[in-house]
Image 1 (tube, one colour):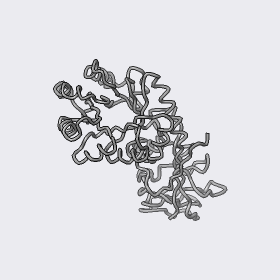
Image 2: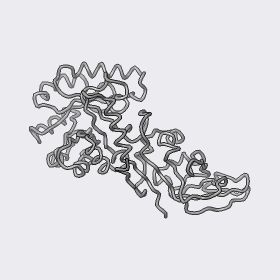
Image 3: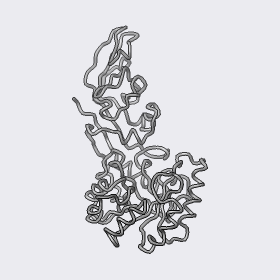
Image 4: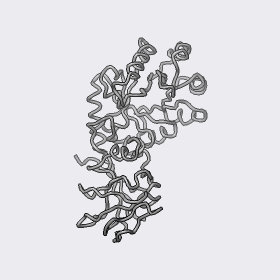
Length: 349
């Protein structure tokens, strides 16, 4: 099989980080979320580029991800673990100087007993009901935790992609109620909260999707270009069908290109018969079903068949594809498969 090409523009990621850093203001430190392998784009390369640009705080989902980022960055930058100090993680946390965000009394006990004096943070639940201490739990445990000097106290907004949603104000008020006067650095906002303005910034912001060119950061520079190589082109007569289950039938003489990629590469089956690939700035409709490894595209209208067609690129971003698939840009990015040949662009500006 020919290999599809995934071009990742590190310069665009840095431009997005700098733009979000400028929005967060001089009193707020801008970190970077590099969990899920930097949303599928390669945490080692992305984190190193961001560190060279000045990012000093990185956030990952679990300890194993933190290990990979530490190995890429070396000593210095702080790496926070959203899932906290899980059973079995003690040695990795200690050896690599990771900072778990403790979410429960069990985690507090584990961390303080196994690694006394080691850095940690605290995660609070302000209404999302996912991770962190609820208000009564925090009130009980704070006198034990605060004297140990947490590096950061954070929470997470549930509805920041809808700025007018009343949940945002409710969580902001709850975060103030739970943290005012603690004398500890605070963080409430990822990309969406950062964009809602200074009231949500506190000491540290942690943009994720905005770095990688996704909504809600509408001013983001596009980061990825996914080009699928054309394997074969065939002439299809009127009445002939294409693909599994005869899902598409030619109404007239047609030319069909078969490109190398499919749902095994993270291209949703729901895109079959609905998505568009691009030959430069010329749209080419997907016809028939998305297969595991192959996609069929109507290129009848092209005067010349290119070597590859773009699913993601200048004419169509991750959120455009997500809209057609009925999902969100996050899922499109994090689902990008491992068979793509990843090419990084850096220092071109």
